[in-house]
Structure formats: C-alpha cells, structure tokens
Image (cartoon, rainbow, N blue to C red; front, side):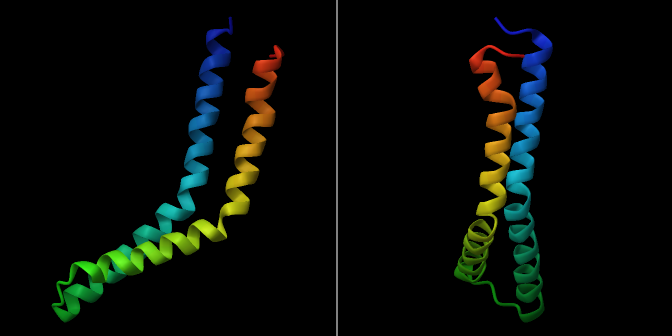
Length: 90
C-alpha cells in the first residue's frame, strides 16, 4: 500500500498537470469568447453560430499548437510520478 502523503502528492501533481495542460486552450476560448461577445454587443448581432464556429476553430488551433506541451507534461508526470509508484519505488 502507498502512504497517504505519497497519494496526496501524486494527486496534487496530477491536478497541477491538468491545469497546465488545459490552460492554453481555456485561455484561447476565453479571449475569443470575449472578443465575439464584444463584437455582438457593438453590432447588435445575436446569431448563435457566430459564437460557436469561431470559438470552436480557435480551440482546435490552440489544441493543435499545444500538443507538444500536452505530451511533454503528461510524459513527465507519468515518468516522474506514476511509473515509480507502479514499479514500487517511492
């Protein structure tokens, strides 16, 4: 069995890895959403596809651009924390 401190440290590191992975995509979604909302407020255009399609495109581009960061972060987390726990080392 693993110690409680090791479990909490692994959970903390896993949550931090999730934050690092999701931050670029969420930041792009926030910026694009604010820009589109401002555009809609200024022009009084209330079209649902105007908000959805550009935001989806920007999120896909941000996801594609941050795939290197995502893979490096996940690899570092698994090699540094999960695999040593599986192998029995603390």
